[in-house]
Image 1 (cartoon, one colour):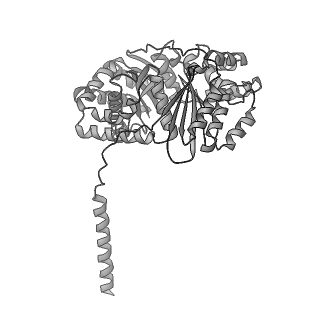
Image 2 (cartoon, one colour):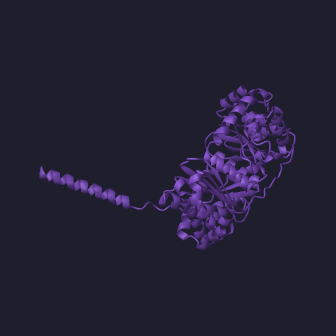
Image 3 (tube, rainbow, N blue to C red):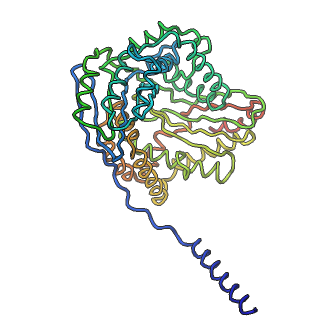
Length: 460
């Protein structure tokens, strides 16, 4: 009996020892990063100015189609905020030959759904269908953008939906702070107008929607993308049949902003709020700049990844916040860098001091090669993964088109990321991430924030 107990004890000891040894074993090193390979594509150009990019990709019998029109919130006047969004909502409500139900049934029978997305610079109409229906799905998408019904009967319902969305957004501290931040950064420009008033939204008529469509939709502003498995000959025939007769329409408008790069501060009071929501940033070079990719690397190292310095500092070490992040937010010929964080109210000033501390630290000394390589590997890996889908490839191609970039931007992205050196990160931070020129917006309990911020504002 004793020997049996001794045997069990020895066995258990060996097992636990093995587990402890396994716990200490380092994972295998990652492989060498590989450049993103853009699949072979072809371009069909029509006489009306519309171009179609066709990308055979993958082995699944699916195809994603996207019609991208250079029309969005950029085309709204100061008293038309969300008119582009409302127009996008009504695009889904049928065409002159298909009502909304028939539209949904036809797309559904092909294995897809109709999606309309409105962004600051573009409106995108897309679907993802079985390959055998790809050319027929294009006929439907083309009908949606060329012949929308824009029915007055659905306008009140859609406005009520938008009013509910507006009410929710205006109750959230993140939305409130972001709206004020953008207004200060882009005064008197569409990029600085995030939300309409209830009166503005409620006052839109069907004439307003139809007018917006007529002023902004046409072949000249439009690009088609098809990615996946499809019959090339049938698709080209469908392109010509459905889109060749569309009128050229207006040329794309160019309203390049002049964002504000100066120290400015606003505190929006939310009494008894347990957290302060912070937006802190400034304009930076737009896509196409030689410094744009080094700027993306710098952002990932500073605050734009889970392993970034600001995240490690105010989340992991200090426990001030759960999910801070920074980003380089881009639009047509424009970009800004912004650090976001929702921090506990009593440590609002302390968190801001740490954010500035980490920026200043990169001003003074470059990161170590080891730290930089870790960030570069992360960026290269996520870039390739993000673009390993039909929709991901289309998103990247549309990005290139909007910003006037060549295919080399994608093919050499990983290489460009790894070409950034520690001293480049320091230079980029010094030149572009300048706290003295930043806009700071805080939403929170003014009675608890104002006093603690006094010292920070003196030294900022």
